[in-house]
Amino acid sequence: MVAEVTGGAAAKAAPAIELRGISKAFGPVQANKDINIKVNKGTIHGIIGENGAGKSTMMSILYGFYKADSGEILIDGKPTQITDSQAAISAGIGMVFQHFKLVENFTVLENVILGAEDSERLMPSLNRARKLLTELAAEYELNVDPDALIETLSVGHQQRVEILKALYREANILILDEPTGVLTPAEADHLFRILRGLKEQGKTIILITHKLREIMDVTDEVSVMRRGEMVATVNTAETSPTELAELMVGRKVLLEVEKTPAKPGEVVLSARGLKVVDEFGVERLRSIDLDIRAGEILGVAGVAGNGQSALLEALAGMAAATGEVKMNGEPLDLTLKHSDAGTRRERGVSHVHEDRHRCGLILDFMAWENIAFGYHNAPEYNKNKLLMDNHAILEDAKGKFERFDVRPPNPMLTAESFSGGNQQKIVLAREIERNPDLLLVGQPTRGVDIGAIEFIHKQLIALRDQGKAILLVSVELDEILSLSDRIVVMFDGRIMGERDPETTNAQDLGLMMAGMTGDVA
Image (cartoon, rainbow, N blue to C red):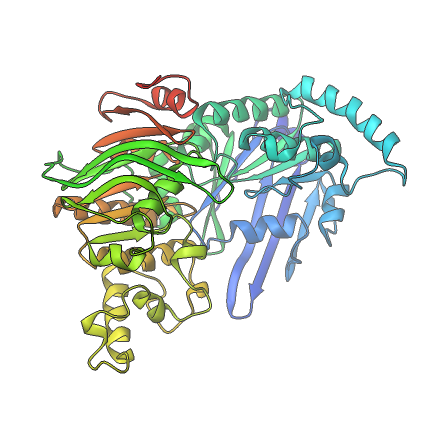
């Protein structure tokens, strides 16, 4: 049963948005089933649910990307046909996507007016837009240089441009999809101030996020979806993260990571003066010194793009480096002339790449084939020297699917057939079950729902407790703080300092992530 909440001034007016009986199927898959929801004017309304719950489909229908099979959309109480995104914009709806839709070599001003020019002569449009942008920036704390190229802006400022684009098109309803995924804590706090300012000006905000803390901090109401259906809408002030997690998953979920104190052993990997220079001559790593011990999780915090990816790829044998790296006391060749990712695997290094689509999986291949990637020469997959034993690989995949609770439990499906969380489980199963001495893992729960997050965290803690060394890179500070036994923070290719998760906090780490403090000059 859906518990609808109303009250106060917002309830006296027609809802800003109302969906009635919205259903949408893709072949045999029922993505949305009889969705009913009301979003009151001048509120911040959260939408949460597991991967595959139907959130994106519902928002895509509202923004005109998909057409519902049945049901009705009402804007300000009036039935409205939204046939495409232009119709959504005309109805006063703007959307800020998780992956920004900006032209990087255009200026802020040019991006804002792109597609909304009011004449063939650009200069009058640009002049009018400049004046309006100045007014919007002042009103909503969206300050950004209108003449700056997008490629020169931080992620947080690029997000402001996306919001300005929507406001320039006179949006009264803003949909934000996972807006804080790549922001520092300070940038996220600033975004929430912006959203509260928009709300005070009468705008209606729909916030899609998997971060329950953000839901509790910033929303007025929250709707929960599960398996394509709307299961509840509640006042945020009258619920809790525990209750919301249970509504999302349909069972009790452990939100806090349970772990015993680490028992660090010998140094498994040691790096001294590690440097990486990319093909453009840009120094991505600047003389990194690092030790990772058996039986511990070393967390690496930082805003994306500050060297974490280069660190993982250098240690995994995917990027050439200079300096000295030893694995179990023996040096690794960093030139890649005589060493590569395959050789690192033979030395006991497993790697869960932060981009599972680009480097973790081949989406067009079967899941059982993906299970063998990188380990296709393993003895258990090769009963003779001529051909791989596909039956052995398939049987191994079935066992991994069962142990890692991959859904659906069918390794004969292509990798792209699985949700993001289950794709991540496939990659983790492949890498963890190789019994590595060192696991390099990047963004293990990016785009993953709360049930899968709980499972993945348990697997990492179990591996640590088996005496394995883990290097964890994540932009999620809650994840870093709860999983790590030691934390280092990276900024601009350097390690700013080390912290004990028991004595630090998000504010301290956030300052280091912004390069404002730390243990280095």
